[in-house]
Image (cartoon, rainbow, N blue to C red; front, side, top):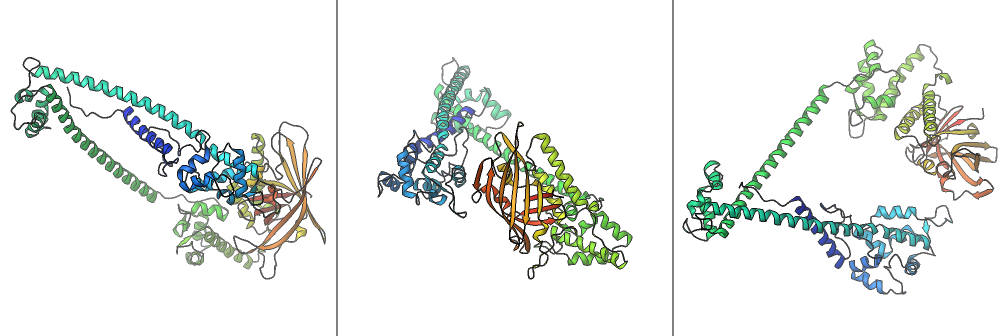
Length: 633
């Protein structure tokens, strides 16, 4: 026999943990009807119990859970002042209609009204229903048509019943999970108990054999000297030294209830002695395990600290590469120079290859660079670091310095010709690549299915293009309005070649009529203006996914180009405002004032314009782009 620590088996631990969870669930079901807040957000070992108990138990619905959680709610559920039921089950359609009538406003219910329905309000306050879950259910519910454009979304009684039942459905799956967990836990408990009984029976037989071997005739009691000769004891006391003589005597005394080493030990006393000996070494083993675990944790922490220090040292000692590319846009150059905090220091400028060449050749002196850097705007909270805006200012200041030299030398600065507009060419080529890739992979046109990386690249190039001198959109004077683009400059037919609008992607186009067996086939915008009228017409192509005849959706309305103060920059900007009037498709003509999918086009900021290219940005989401190309010559 060798000394070992008797530990619970994995199945026993699993059964114990699962049993605790099941007992908690039973306690809930019989008392409160709601899980404690602490248990609704945790995942318990040994039982895949969902984050809360079923919302509906055997179709008793909200009434069971709500009445159990609040005596006041129980009283109210029995009878209210108008005879209605505040906590009806989801299956009782008439009761749900009565509940809707009690809390609606003129036959309709807004989202705030829904959240104040007692059954739902109580679930939100207790944490059984998440606010985000209710928001998703509300969004999915059919809405009653708005009377006015600024009206809130509202639902009628049919949608209310659907919302109520959708909430109820959140909890249906959990009940089956709890029943399955109870069955699995019971089986684990039986297996664990059977395993323990087998081990105890084996240990008992082994102790009987050892007792018989130590005695004179197999059944006679043992003296202290005979027990002292047991190989297990001699190993622990004489060889390993893990058991002292005084500890052995104490175990003998406690097992027989005597003082000293007198007396004799029968089989029952021998079993008790062995159990006490096991307990003694279990405590020591636990202490050794805990000490070893603490040492391992300390060693791991020390190794992690060393690794972190070595990594930091490598970063400090490894020089970052010199940027040798020429004529990079300032935004791209900044991203390559910036550190992990997206900031640029004066030392980081040494990696700017073109700047280093200017200093080396004497085109720019160190004093001039120091002055320009000192005058550049610094990042908030710093005195010597440049953010992107400050770096672009420094870049422009250096560029202007050389432009002045050119003017002094008599070289007239001319606007670049269309062939020289590299950024514009780069943007159009990149959009064309996206379009070709979309066609090959069967994705939506105009970049509606472009990746996040592709959208970031288009936005970056467009932002740089907007800073070019050939951009006809210039800063507008807040006092005089000088610099505003004239409406006549936008008149003509334009084709949408790219958009990052998430709304258009979701609706599969502008009108939202594509989908199913059809898909978005392109969009044209026709702007016309006279002395008294300004008309706009969108022509959206809808084509079959598997071939077939092409159709058109026409959206007509009025448009205007006016100067407004930007919500983000606080500076005046050119805003293209569209008021849609009618949507025509096939034989149908519908009013467009409540056509929600048209929203992204109704208010856009003009950020770039030349003879054949126009870039618009979202009025409230400036990263949303609409790129148009003139097609009327």
